[in-house]
Picture 1 (cartoon, rainbow over the protein chains, first blue to last red):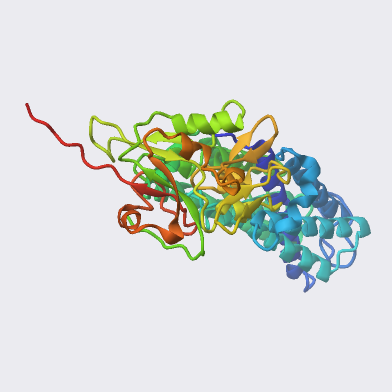
Picture 2: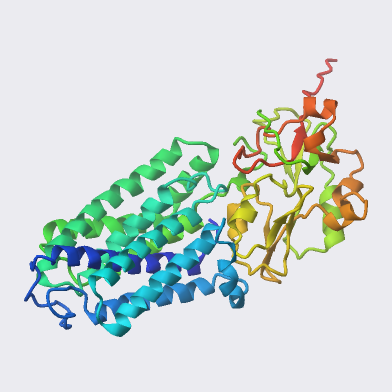
Length: 280
Length: 195
């Protein structure tokens, strides 16, 4: 197993949690536009922004802090964190530069909503769209040609599922009763999709080229992969099938699963250079 | 075993004659002696060919360093523009600009950029570009005792080299999107002498 790249594990998982929260907040607000969520109490006991618009200041503040911790964690990945600002120098070609720009803009939008406490439809929509764009840049950054198993849409798919799982789990802490069925449906659907994806993808790799097969074997041999599958997907899926709403402990459990899964993503994916001189 | 052409007017590259290579590691040691890399950091390495590729008692080796690709993954992935592709095709890493993000290391399919744990920056073979500019050969090429390693311009290969050179031999990742410039002359099947 290679280095699990802990700072990158934290950066990607936490940033995707923030994107998921912003995305589902925007979706919830669309669902509440007709007044469906009006006069419903929030489970977190926090005041809404007024009217029928969902998204309390606490929720925006939480997303901002999560994104801030993610950006802070990413600095520990650099050999020279003092040069981090220069990562914007190669926007014309490097997906990493674009990723930093997109997540910087996303963090700024979250901070504006958290500070003002008045996130209108435009701000909610902008945060969701910029968050999705940032998610796309992440998917491209972590799909390098050197890793045949990931040099495709798999990272983007993994990251999108992470955003939905974490966004629904943590979003339920703040959502009103009217939004809980929608968040439950999103979480249930995402868990079912994640189960299929995380079982099928290694099987597809196992039928691919030499390096893909090595990646499949490394993933399947990793205890973290099974921990991610059982703790992060199967147990939550069973609970959600039986439960009419998302329990408050679901967020931390899904987060643990995502962290384990991301450690496998960075630590067990085989680099093409490990196979030089061997049939490729 | 396909071979891509280069669209560049000039592309300096290594020609690895696997038939001549005896696996003595002189090229790798010459690189190490010239640049004094940290322990564990190697810019040139020898890879023995697996028996599935070369099923003979006699062994064969790939001597590999940076491939100075036409469309380098390292250059495209670097967020701080620490990489430069010169007019002669050489891909140079400017370590003073590097912030040690490791994105080039993750991106290069051939593992050319390596992490220097002391400087906390990436580094790789820059084809001894200072020596080239001074009219000298790269340290590895100059040191090879059997002339298994040569410096060529693949935009102007000789007829003999063009006829024999292979870009993607077995055991070497086929990555047309980066178009690596290294070329190989493959070993012949050993002659069996019956007693």
